[in-house]
Length: 328
Image (cartoon, rainbow, N blue to C red; front, top):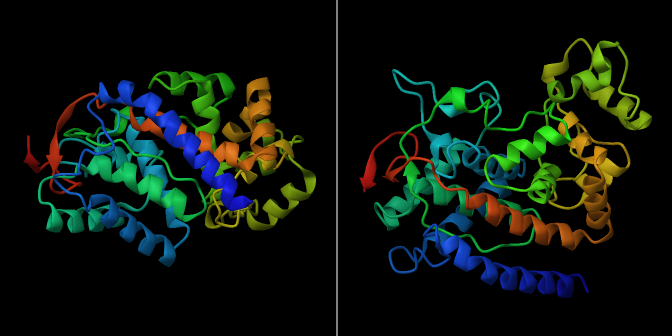
């Protein structure tokens, strides 16, 4: 029955995707972009992602997160992968990213394998899109068609990150506004927040809710008391940054994230904020009642996010970390 449900949702995903092709194609993105120039690209990426996640399941969330943080700043152009230069501090060095984003070395390895097979063909931005999909599927998510043909950017500016990415302290309205700036709607925001289904957070991301809610030296009264106590054991008041909060999903990409929100076990303010609006509550209930509904919708939302156009496309970078285009 589980396999049949998965197949049905996968079928509907592909049908819905067909309806998006005309829109996406206007941005010159297609699912068969590399069929003639590098037909083995998807296989190479999947094999590498499987190896990476088999060695470290926690890396799946990091790989997915790179795609998020890339697309919200300058569009999906691989700019999050660029190193800083003598004159410019890059996105990866921004306060919200530095020490938080990881997986850069794995993207470099994948790029190297692709360059060996198809020199100067596959863009770094497309690698991020394929990797995010494959990492999600590896931990139990449904697959989705990845539209390809993105062009890498040549600029990466740390100062642009804070004005582009959603903060962990944002309320519902602020989250909606942040996603709207890149062309994503409220439903996209609620669904993509489900990316928090995998991975772990440093205690600092929710420390105030545990120990100093609204500066009152108390625990957030909206948090489940038993859950709060278990987190406090992992995140002591006197040493918050050396511990991580427990991953309640057991490294599986599923709808447990929304179940946690409905039972007052959310971690960050931005997670809890979803329950402050009827749309967030309604979606969470649907996701819990039908987990495959969430997995299906997540794939569709990832297609939408992956279609955010690059603001300043430049060329295909041979080295994802530096400006050295293979062709233009």
